[in-house]
Length: 185
Image (cartoon, rainbow, N blue to C red; front, side, top):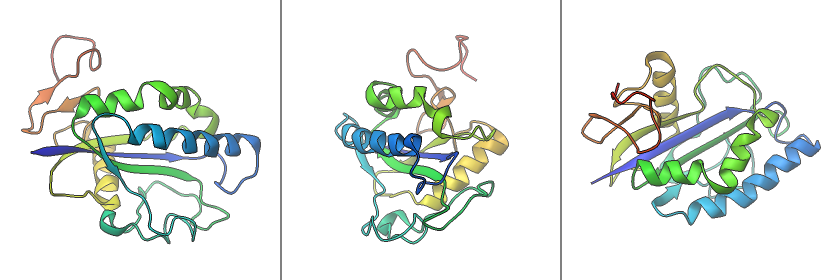
């Protein structure tokens, strides 16, 4: 059996420590969204640090999810005062539950506001890939796959919801998403 790994990464317009109203709003949204996502059918797990309040993403103990990593193109800070990123790494039973959790409800509302908080980098903001059910993806896996997606486009190794692949590597589509043509690319 396989699971879907999902890595998201965004560069924030201002550091996480910024006390501005928009930054506080982003934090509040996240605090409301994560519990809802974790209750969504098909959700299995997400990377959570054991010592969540003791440093930056880079300093935290992520256990089996590995050492925190970011794409090579992230050029902002790495200290408590300067870090300006948001990243998630999660496991799902399949494409449809992950898609539904992200593109409905509170998370959909937040996505509608993403350009208030996040820079437009010209890089993909998420990537998916299949893992064996006994594998926990690492942050470095997510970074490598996101960079591969940016450099090569969707492939069985790294793909998006709109250009997705089945666990056996064949192109697939989720009903009501994907390329507008009837052909699978």
